Amino acid sequence: MVAIVDDDQAMRTSIERLLQAGGYDTASFASAEAFLDNSVGETAIGLVLDVELEGMSGLELLRRLQSSRSTLPVVVITGRDRPATRARAVALGCIDYLRKPFDADSLTRALERCAAIRGTRSPGSFNPKE
Image 1 (tube, rainbow, N blue to C red):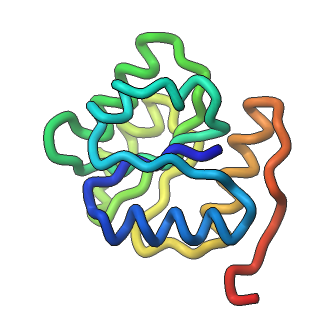
Image 2 (image 1 turned 60 degrees about the horizontal axis):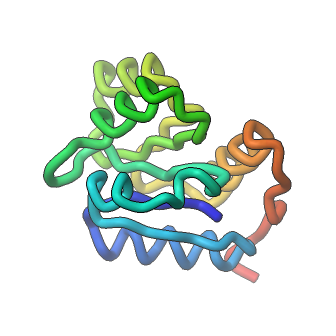
Image 3 (image 1 turned 45 degrees about the vertical axis):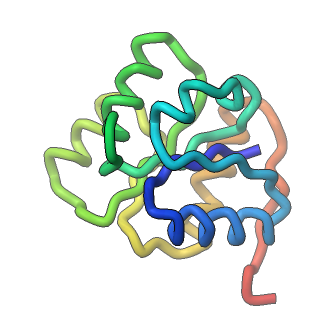
């Protein structure tokens, strides 16, 4: 299971379809607050997290996860790549930082690292064009 937090419905749907085509189960949320109100983070192999969200930002959610000593690996995604944002995300412990639009292979590799960190198996490599 991969959790997705992005306030853009079209982006959430695209990521869900991509991951489901690769054999992943997904749970998606339109806000950081909705994610925090759910317990999926306890069982997910990773979190795909947008930086710019309405309400609590993705970086604030990442900071809260870090301060609570969460072991959930986080892949940060953003449409507005800024050096300061990237540096803060890395300092807060994200395992990867992807700029939108990102390719399927980049996300797959990041999720394989998430699975390894969580000690689980990922569905494996996939080609969404098949």
